[in-house]
Length: 346
Image 1 (tube, rainbow, N blue to C red):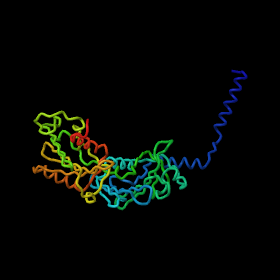
Image 2 (spheres, rainbow, N blue to C red):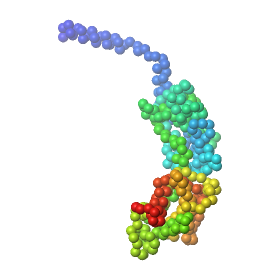
Image 3 (spheres, rainbow, N blue to C red):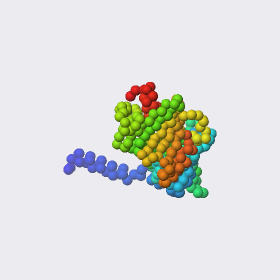
Image 4 (cartoon, rainbow, N blue to C red):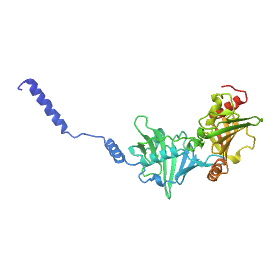
Protein backbone atom coordinates (compact mmCIF):
# COMPACT_ATOMS: atom_id res chain seq x y z
CA UNK A 1 0.00 0.00 0.00
CA UNK A 2 2.54 2.61 -1.31
CA UNK A 3 0.32 5.62 -0.99
CA UNK A 4 0.55 8.82 1.07
CA UNK A 5 -2.24 7.50 3.32
CA UNK A 6 -0.30 4.29 4.04
CA UNK A 7 2.82 6.27 5.00
CA UNK A 8 0.71 8.47 7.27
CA UNK A 9 -0.82 5.46 9.08
CA UNK A 10 2.62 3.91 9.56
CA UNK A 11 3.83 7.10 11.23
CA UNK A 12 0.87 7.16 13.63
CA UNK A 13 1.50 3.55 14.66
CA UNK A 14 5.18 4.28 15.35
CA UNK A 15 4.26 7.26 17.55
CA UNK A 16 1.77 5.15 19.55
CA UNK A 17 4.35 2.43 20.16
CA UNK A 18 6.86 5.01 21.37
CA UNK A 19 4.27 6.47 23.74
CA UNK A 20 3.59 3.05 25.28
CA UNK A 21 7.29 2.73 26.13
CA UNK A 22 7.31 5.97 28.12
CA UNK A 23 7.09 5.67 31.96
CA UNK A 24 3.77 6.84 33.48
CA UNK A 25 4.10 9.50 36.17
CA UNK A 26 1.75 8.95 39.18
CA UNK A 27 1.29 11.24 42.16
CA UNK A 28 2.99 9.51 45.16
CA UNK A 29 0.00 10.37 47.37
CA UNK A 30 -2.34 8.55 44.99
CA UNK A 31 -0.01 5.55 44.98
CA UNK A 32 -0.03 5.50 48.79
CA UNK A 33 -3.82 5.66 48.90
CA UNK A 34 -4.07 2.79 46.40
CA UNK A 35 -1.70 0.66 48.48
CA UNK A 36 -3.72 1.53 51.61
CA UNK A 37 -7.01 0.52 50.00
CA UNK A 38 -5.64 -2.74 48.63
CA UNK A 39 -4.04 -3.52 52.00
CA UNK A 40 -7.36 -3.34 53.89
CA UNK A 41 -9.97 -4.20 51.24
CA UNK A 42 -12.07 -7.28 52.03
CA UNK A 43 -10.31 -7.89 55.35
CA UNK A 44 -12.51 -8.52 58.37
CA UNK A 45 -13.17 -5.26 60.16
CA UNK A 46 -12.46 -6.81 63.57
CA UNK A 47 -10.57 -10.07 62.88
CA UNK A 48 -10.01 -10.81 66.57
CA UNK A 49 -13.71 -10.64 67.44
CA UNK A 50 -15.66 -13.85 68.09
CA UNK A 51 -19.28 -12.74 68.50
CA UNK A 52 -20.17 -16.13 69.97
CA UNK A 53 -17.95 -15.28 72.94
CA UNK A 54 -19.30 -11.76 73.51
CA UNK A 55 -21.08 -11.44 76.85
CA UNK A 56 -21.71 -7.70 77.16
CA UNK A 57 -22.64 -4.91 74.73
CA UNK A 58 -23.10 -1.38 76.04
CA UNK A 59 -24.74 1.15 73.73
CA UNK A 60 -24.32 4.94 73.97
CA UNK A 61 -25.57 7.83 71.84
CA UNK A 62 -25.30 11.64 71.89
CA UNK A 63 -23.51 11.95 75.22
CA UNK A 64 -21.30 10.24 77.75
CA UNK A 65 -23.98 8.33 79.68
CA UNK A 66 -24.69 4.85 78.26
CA UNK A 67 -28.20 4.24 77.01
CA UNK A 68 -28.47 0.53 77.77
CA UNK A 69 -26.49 -2.60 78.45
CA UNK A 70 -27.05 -6.00 76.83
CA UNK A 71 -25.83 -9.10 78.66
CA UNK A 72 -25.80 -12.68 77.46
CA UNK A 73 -28.06 -14.97 79.46
CA UNK A 74 -27.47 -18.47 78.10
CA UNK A 75 -28.99 -18.61 74.62
CA UNK A 76 -30.76 -15.30 75.09
CA UNK A 77 -29.82 -11.74 76.03
CA UNK A 78 -31.12 -9.46 78.77
CA UNK A 79 -31.35 -5.67 78.57
CA UNK A 80 -30.75 -3.24 81.42
CA UNK A 81 -31.84 0.38 81.05
CA UNK A 82 -29.12 2.78 82.22
CA UNK A 83 -30.79 6.19 81.97
CA UNK A 84 -34.04 5.41 83.82
CA UNK A 85 -34.54 6.65 87.38
CA UNK A 86 -35.13 3.03 88.33
CA UNK A 87 -33.10 0.72 86.04
CA UNK A 88 -35.02 -2.22 84.59
CA UNK A 89 -33.69 -5.56 83.39
CA UNK A 90 -35.93 -7.19 80.77
CA UNK A 91 -35.57 -9.69 77.90
CA UNK A 92 -33.88 -8.18 74.84
CA UNK A 93 -35.11 -8.12 71.25
CA UNK A 94 -33.43 -11.28 69.95
CA UNK A 95 -34.07 -10.49 66.29
CA UNK A 96 -32.21 -7.20 66.63
CA UNK A 97 -29.41 -8.80 68.67
CA UNK A 98 -28.87 -11.54 66.07
CA UNK A 99 -28.67 -8.95 63.27
CA UNK A 100 -26.16 -6.93 65.28
CA UNK A 101 -23.94 -9.94 66.05
CA UNK A 102 -23.99 -11.16 62.45
CA UNK A 103 -23.00 -7.73 61.14
CA UNK A 104 -20.20 -7.34 63.69
CA UNK A 105 -18.80 -10.78 62.94
CA UNK A 106 -19.08 -10.60 59.15
CA UNK A 107 -18.15 -6.95 58.47
CA UNK A 108 -15.42 -6.62 55.86
CA UNK A 109 -13.54 -3.51 54.86
CA UNK A 110 -14.33 -2.00 51.47
CA UNK A 111 -11.84 0.82 51.90
CA UNK A 112 -10.03 2.88 54.49
CA UNK A 113 -11.73 6.25 54.21
CA UNK A 114 -9.64 8.58 56.35
CA UNK A 115 -7.58 8.82 59.52
CA UNK A 116 -7.96 12.61 59.74
CA UNK A 117 -10.02 13.50 62.83
CA UNK A 118 -11.32 16.70 61.21
CA UNK A 119 -13.27 14.52 58.77
CA UNK A 120 -14.84 12.23 61.38
CA UNK A 121 -17.86 14.48 61.95
CA UNK A 122 -18.75 14.43 58.25
CA UNK A 123 -18.96 10.63 58.33
CA UNK A 124 -20.89 10.40 61.62
CA UNK A 125 -18.04 8.76 63.55
CA UNK A 126 -16.72 11.57 65.75
CA UNK A 127 -16.69 11.10 69.52
CA UNK A 128 -20.27 10.88 70.78
CA UNK A 129 -19.78 13.45 73.54
CA UNK A 130 -19.06 16.16 70.96
CA UNK A 131 -21.77 18.57 69.85
CA UNK A 132 -23.68 17.29 66.84
CA UNK A 133 -22.44 13.72 67.16
CA UNK A 134 -24.83 11.31 65.50
CA UNK A 135 -23.03 7.97 65.67
CA UNK A 136 -23.67 5.06 68.03
CA UNK A 137 -20.91 3.85 70.34
CA UNK A 138 -20.78 0.10 70.97
CA UNK A 139 -18.64 -1.14 73.87
CA UNK A 140 -18.11 -4.87 73.34
CA UNK A 141 -16.70 -7.19 76.01
CA UNK A 142 -15.67 -10.83 76.00
CA UNK A 143 -13.83 -11.89 79.14
CA UNK A 144 -10.74 -9.70 79.39
CA UNK A 145 -11.05 -8.51 75.77
CA UNK A 146 -12.87 -5.33 74.79
CA UNK A 147 -13.62 -3.29 71.68
CA UNK A 148 -14.96 0.24 71.19
CA UNK A 149 -16.72 0.86 67.91
CA UNK A 150 -18.59 3.88 66.55
CA UNK A 151 -21.18 3.08 63.88
CA UNK A 152 -21.62 6.14 61.68
CA UNK A 153 -23.40 7.23 58.51
CA UNK A 154 -24.30 5.06 55.56
CA UNK A 155 -22.36 5.99 52.44
CA UNK A 156 -24.49 8.22 50.22
CA UNK A 157 -22.67 7.45 46.96
CA UNK A 158 -21.19 3.99 47.53
CA UNK A 159 -22.35 0.84 49.24
CA UNK A 160 -21.66 0.29 52.90
CA UNK A 161 -21.41 2.27 56.12
CA UNK A 162 -18.66 4.13 57.97
CA UNK A 163 -17.33 2.46 61.12
CA UNK A 164 -14.46 3.48 63.37
CA UNK A 165 -12.82 1.25 65.96
CA UNK A 166 -11.90 3.73 68.70
CA UNK A 167 -9.34 1.51 70.42
CA UNK A 168 -8.10 -0.15 67.23
CA UNK A 169 -4.63 -0.05 65.74
CA UNK A 170 -5.28 2.69 63.18
CA UNK A 171 -8.23 4.72 64.60
CA UNK A 172 -9.09 5.23 60.93
CA UNK A 173 -12.58 5.30 59.47
CA UNK A 174 -13.39 2.26 57.38
CA UNK A 175 -16.19 1.84 54.87
CA UNK A 176 -17.54 -1.64 55.56
CA UNK A 177 -19.94 -3.87 53.66
CA UNK A 178 -22.58 -3.98 56.44
CA UNK A 179 -25.53 -1.67 57.11
CA UNK A 180 -26.64 -1.38 60.72
CA UNK A 181 -29.79 0.47 61.78
CA UNK A 182 -29.39 0.88 65.54
CA UNK A 183 -32.48 2.25 67.33
CA UNK A 184 -32.04 5.19 69.67
CA UNK A 185 -35.20 4.20 71.55
CA UNK A 186 -34.53 1.80 74.44
CA UNK A 187 -37.94 0.13 74.03
CA UNK A 188 -37.04 -0.99 70.50
CA UNK A 189 -34.17 -3.04 71.97
CA UNK A 190 -36.60 -4.88 74.25
CA UNK A 191 -38.61 -8.01 73.57
CA UNK A 192 -41.93 -6.15 73.55
CA UNK A 193 -44.21 -9.16 73.45
CA UNK A 194 -46.21 -9.59 76.66
CA UNK A 195 -48.15 -12.63 75.52
CA UNK A 196 -49.42 -14.19 72.31
CA UNK A 197 -52.59 -16.11 73.06
CA UNK A 198 -54.21 -17.71 69.97
CA UNK A 199 -57.82 -16.67 69.48
CA UNK A 200 -58.94 -20.28 68.98
CA UNK A 201 -58.07 -21.05 72.59
CA UNK A 202 -60.49 -18.50 74.07
CA UNK A 203 -63.73 -20.00 75.43
CA UNK A 204 -65.13 -17.01 77.32
CA UNK A 205 -64.55 -13.33 78.01
CA UNK A 206 -65.85 -11.56 81.11
CA UNK A 207 -65.75 -7.78 81.43
CA UNK A 208 -66.15 -5.82 84.66
CA UNK A 209 -65.99 -2.04 84.91
CA UNK A 210 -65.25 0.14 87.91
CA UNK A 211 -68.83 1.50 87.80
CA UNK A 212 -70.25 -1.99 88.44
CA UNK A 213 -71.22 -3.08 84.93
CA UNK A 214 -70.39 -6.64 83.88
CA UNK A 215 -70.74 -8.66 80.66
CA UNK A 216 -70.10 -12.29 79.78
CA UNK A 217 -69.27 -13.61 76.31
CA UNK A 218 -69.06 -17.34 75.69
CA UNK A 219 -68.82 -20.07 73.05
CA UNK A 220 -68.83 -23.86 73.17
CA UNK A 221 -66.06 -24.50 70.62
CA UNK A 222 -63.32 -22.62 68.83
CA UNK A 223 -65.32 -22.89 65.59
CA UNK A 224 -68.14 -20.71 66.96
CA UNK A 225 -68.40 -16.96 67.46
CA UNK A 226 -68.76 -15.46 70.90
CA UNK A 227 -72.30 -14.77 72.10
CA UNK A 228 -73.53 -12.57 74.90
CA UNK A 229 -74.70 -14.58 77.90
CA UNK A 230 -75.09 -18.38 77.74
CA UNK A 231 -73.35 -20.11 74.85
CA UNK A 232 -76.38 -22.38 74.35
CA UNK A 233 -79.09 -19.72 74.57
CA UNK A 234 -80.47 -17.84 71.59
CA UNK A 235 -78.62 -14.55 71.21
CA UNK A 236 -78.47 -11.54 68.97
CA UNK A 237 -75.59 -11.33 66.50
CA UNK A 238 -72.70 -9.38 67.98
CA UNK A 239 -70.99 -6.73 65.83
CA UNK A 240 -67.43 -7.09 64.62
CA UNK A 241 -66.21 -4.56 67.18
CA UNK A 242 -67.14 -7.06 69.92
CA UNK A 243 -66.15 -10.22 68.05
CA UNK A 244 -62.66 -8.77 67.60
CA UNK A 245 -62.24 -8.91 71.37
CA UNK A 246 -61.35 -12.58 70.95
CA UNK A 247 -57.99 -11.35 69.63
CA UNK A 248 -57.47 -9.33 72.82
CA UNK A 249 -54.39 -11.26 73.91
CA UNK A 250 -53.03 -12.16 70.46
CA UNK A 251 -49.59 -10.62 69.88
CA UNK A 252 -50.02 -8.32 72.85
CA UNK A 253 -47.04 -5.92 72.78
CA UNK A 254 -46.11 -2.96 74.95
CA UNK A 255 -44.77 0.45 73.96
CA UNK A 256 -43.54 1.30 77.48
CA UNK A 257 -42.83 -0.66 80.64
CA UNK A 258 -42.26 0.01 84.33
CA UNK A 259 -41.72 -2.09 87.43
CA UNK A 260 -45.01 -3.07 89.05
CA UNK A 261 -43.78 -1.72 92.40
CA UNK A 262 -43.83 1.80 90.94
CA UNK A 263 -47.46 1.58 89.81
CA UNK A 264 -50.12 3.71 91.46
CA UNK A 265 -52.39 1.65 93.67
CA UNK A 266 -55.78 2.39 92.15
CA UNK A 267 -58.79 0.51 90.90
CA UNK A 268 -58.54 -0.44 87.22
CA UNK A 269 -61.17 1.13 84.98
CA UNK A 270 -61.86 -2.32 83.53
CA UNK A 271 -60.87 -5.93 84.08
CA UNK A 272 -61.21 -8.38 81.22
CA UNK A 273 -60.92 -12.09 81.98
CA UNK A 274 -60.05 -14.37 79.07
CA UNK A 275 -61.03 -17.96 79.89
CA UNK A 276 -59.39 -20.73 77.87
CA UNK A 277 -60.84 -24.09 76.90
CA UNK A 278 -58.22 -25.81 79.09
CA UNK A 279 -59.52 -24.03 82.18
CA UNK A 280 -56.72 -21.48 82.47
CA UNK A 281 -57.64 -17.78 82.64
CA UNK A 282 -55.81 -14.50 82.09
CA UNK A 283 -57.01 -11.35 83.84
CA UNK A 284 -56.19 -8.07 82.09
CA UNK A 285 -56.53 -4.94 84.26
CA UNK A 286 -56.74 -1.70 82.26
CA UNK A 287 -55.87 1.85 83.30
CA UNK A 288 -56.64 4.07 80.25
CA UNK A 289 -54.75 7.32 79.67
CA UNK A 290 -54.49 9.88 76.86
CA UNK A 291 -52.08 7.74 74.80
CA UNK A 292 -53.56 4.27 75.32
CA UNK A 293 -53.60 2.40 78.60
CA UNK A 294 -51.43 0.87 81.26
CA UNK A 295 -52.22 -2.73 82.05
CA UNK A 296 -51.40 -5.56 84.42
CA UNK A 297 -51.80 -9.20 83.43
CA UNK A 298 -52.30 -12.17 85.74
CA UNK A 299 -52.74 -15.86 84.97
CA UNK A 300 -55.08 -18.09 86.98
CA UNK A 301 -54.65 -21.87 86.92
CA UNK A 302 -57.23 -24.63 87.19
CA UNK A 303 -55.17 -26.52 89.73
CA UNK A 304 -54.15 -29.32 87.38
CA UNK A 305 -50.54 -30.48 87.61
CA UNK A 306 -48.28 -29.27 84.80
CA UNK A 307 -50.66 -26.48 83.82
CA UNK A 308 -50.55 -25.09 87.37
CA UNK A 309 -46.75 -25.08 87.29
CA UNK A 310 -46.76 -23.27 83.96
CA UNK A 311 -49.14 -20.60 85.26
CA UNK A 312 -46.93 -20.08 88.31
CA UNK A 313 -43.96 -19.48 86.02
CA UNK A 314 -45.97 -17.11 83.81
CA UNK A 315 -47.05 -15.08 86.83
CA UNK A 316 -43.48 -14.92 88.10
CA UNK A 317 -42.62 -12.98 84.93
CA UNK A 318 -45.85 -11.00 84.45
CA UNK A 319 -46.21 -9.81 88.04
CA UNK A 320 -42.93 -7.88 87.87
CA UNK A 321 -44.16 -5.40 85.28
CA UNK A 322 -46.79 -2.87 84.37
CA UNK A 323 -47.13 -2.46 80.61
CA UNK A 324 -48.33 0.43 78.47
CA UNK A 325 -50.46 -0.50 75.46
CA UNK A 326 -50.89 1.52 72.27
CA UNK A 327 -54.01 3.54 71.53
CA UNK A 328 -54.91 1.06 68.75
CA UNK A 329 -54.80 -1.93 71.10
CA UNK A 330 -56.69 -0.03 73.79
CA UNK A 331 -59.42 0.86 71.27
CA UNK A 332 -59.97 -2.87 70.67
CA UNK A 333 -61.06 -3.20 74.30
CA UNK A 334 -62.84 0.13 74.75
CA UNK A 335 -65.00 -0.15 71.60
CA UNK A 336 -66.27 -3.54 72.73
CA UNK A 337 -67.07 -2.24 76.20
CA UNK A 338 -68.82 0.86 74.83
CA UNK A 339 -71.04 -1.26 72.59
CA UNK A 340 -71.97 -3.66 75.37
CA UNK A 341 -72.72 -0.69 77.62
CA UNK A 342 -75.07 0.70 74.98
CA UNK A 343 -72.81 3.69 74.38
CA UNK A 344 -71.39 2.71 71.01
CA UNK A 345 -72.34 1.29 67.65
CA UNK A 346 -70.57 -0.91 65.13
